[in-house]
Image: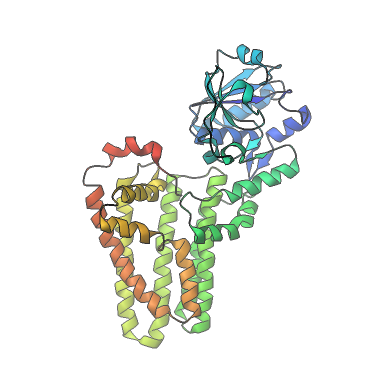
Amino acid sequence: MQVVISISDSNSPIGQDRTSDLLVRPVAGIPLLKRTIVTASRAGATEIVLISSDILGHALARQFSQNVVSSGTPVRFIHSSTFDPRERRSWNRVAHYVNDHFLWIPWNWVTSKQFLKGLPLRPLASVNWTKPAQVCLSEIDEPTPTLPFFETMGVRITSAESVAAAERFLVAHSGKILDGIHTSFNRRLCRPFVRMLSHTSVTPNQVTFGGVVISVLSAVAFARGGYLYSLLGALLFYIAGLFDEMDGMLARIKFAESPRGTWLEGFADGLSYLLLFGGIMIGLSHRYGSAAIIMGGVLLAGIVLALIVTSLQRRRATTADRPNEYLGRMYQLLDGDSGNWISRVVRQLQAFIRRGILVHYIVIFAVIGALPLVFLLATIGAHLTWILTLYFDRRFFAQPFAAGATSTANTMKETA
């Protein structure tokens, strides 16, 4: 898919001086024009054509081209001081570089990659050049109807106020496709902090480590035993869960996702579970003695086994550069195997055991004084997890995954 972006006087009525400033204005920590290009690259662009007038000077163009090399998509710079996308003759002048079908993205339109996919194909005369659109330079039939949000989701940057609105938009849409109601609620609480962090040098991995530190404090509180310490531990564990949401949100809006970060987040999640139930085990031992220690040992063994087998399955289910697609891949396989009652039941129950929901359960059970019950349920769940993971590993991945990775790569849903 070719993407075309134009920076010209006719397409920038906000003024040349202000346009020059806005081009490099950070939006959630990323210069505006760089954000536009990297978003296009992540939406599937195979080539980006940047049509520029004198607004983007040669020095700035060279500096910018060096910054966007990491996007992985080649960027072609074309100088055209009189380019006006509303005029056919302007397109005729750049016809040598532009395909008949392309994705148009205004240079100052801030959006996410999800909203650039599925746009309807439109003829030249019907395009609103202030918004993204799939454009066909030749004559076509009436465009295929589509949902309205595909045409409008995003913010057009024209001032400092619109920059703030764009940052709020990015943070509000920095979740995952598979988020449920509980996770969405957690992310809503995180939004102001993520926006604040996007203007700092704090990295997503540092946020992850911060969550681990709070998990340690939560475990210490649980280990003290008693009702009030249990409430404190539950509250701290909930806050640690919010850190788990924030690291992914920050990574997405700052284009900082990486396979290493995905594995680090998975390790941090596993460690937080060990700390949580280790602390609860020690706290319950003050009341129940050795019975709590024995049950805790069985639970921790189940958690370790579950972490090991799910990590191995993640390696088989995804390519090395996309471990974040593991959950989406498994959902896809479970949905396709709905004729098997085990797959059907697990697919329905899986949404209730994610960390975004678990933090709510821990708070509720701590409030009602039922931590022994959640301890028992967690023990059963941990051992069912590794047993079922082995079952699905044999059912879905008896053949090497590499043989099917290519055919499914384009249908993956991002989940990290």
